[in-house]
Length: 115
Image (cartoon, rainbow, N blue to C red; front, side, top):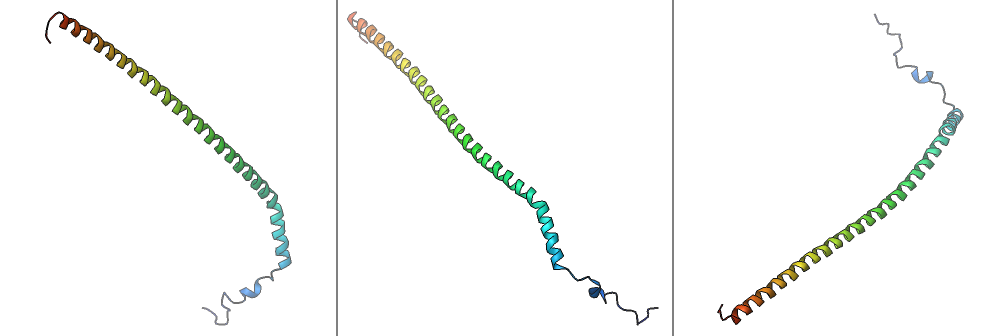
């Protein structure tokens, strides 16, 4: 059976906790910080360097991309010129054919054949 004089399990727990020494907590915290801080600072500077390098890399990439765009526009211009040459030669051929036809019709007219 349960003896009513037995204390409940929660009683006396608060009194059992040792008093927290604030000075000790402060020293422990400082110890932890001093242990991890140098590594964190090194990581921070490494990250900053990495970020700066990335910025430089991005700028360089943008410059290269703009160069490629210029190259593409030059290629387009070249294609345009070659196309223009092609059509010019077609026009010259058509003109020559028209002149030949004109000569032939003129000769036929001279021969007395009505067209």
